[in-house]
Length: 112
Image 1 (tube, rainbow, N blue to C red):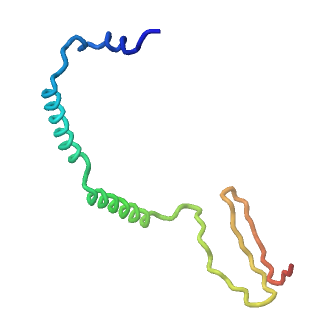
Image 2: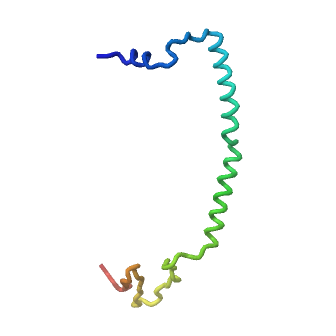
Image 3: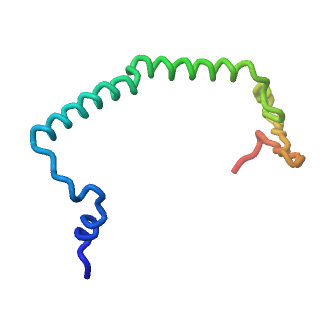
């Protein structure tokens, strides 16, 4: 079986060049780390700015939601009616989106 390390060394276009000495490598690393610090600080906004953006987005969503008309076919509950007489029957009526009407009748005299 062929060693993968040999394949990598054979395919390396810079394989024949000498390595950097330790001082040059450290100087290059310092330059890269200094550049990384300056770009990473500017890339992320401060937490207060991020929180303000989220708050503004939520406020805008709530404001738009209050201005929109209610959805078509949404159920609006009727005022609750209390049975005052002992034999009074109450009904709950609604219809499904397919057009089926459902009527429930509640009998206050029902004893189980």
